[in-house]
Length: 115
Image 1 (cartoon, rainbow, N blue to C red):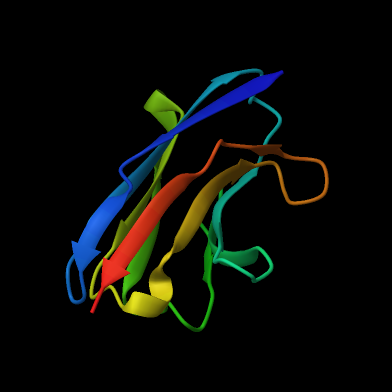
Image 2 (image 1 turned 90 degrees about the horizontal axis):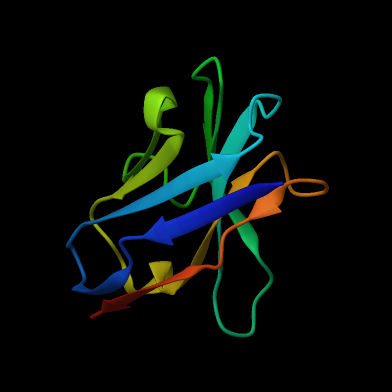
């Protein structure tokens, strides 16, 4: 069993920055991909960024150049640095370890960007 605890969400003005953190505990030794997803009101959950144990990253086109995903293996933590935030980035952000289909999810953290 894996537990994920997210932190770092909040309210920020457009153009501002936030850093999300997701700390994992439990049996994560077999997990090789971690990521962040988001869900805005009335919309489906969508990919934001993923990172593998080898450090390979993937980003949604909408966040490329503005967001950076990283991980600290020693702390079992994955981060999402979000810069140049836009109102359309407003959503609940979810951490995922192990993939969408069979992986584990955090409880979600709200990010709100005001114009």
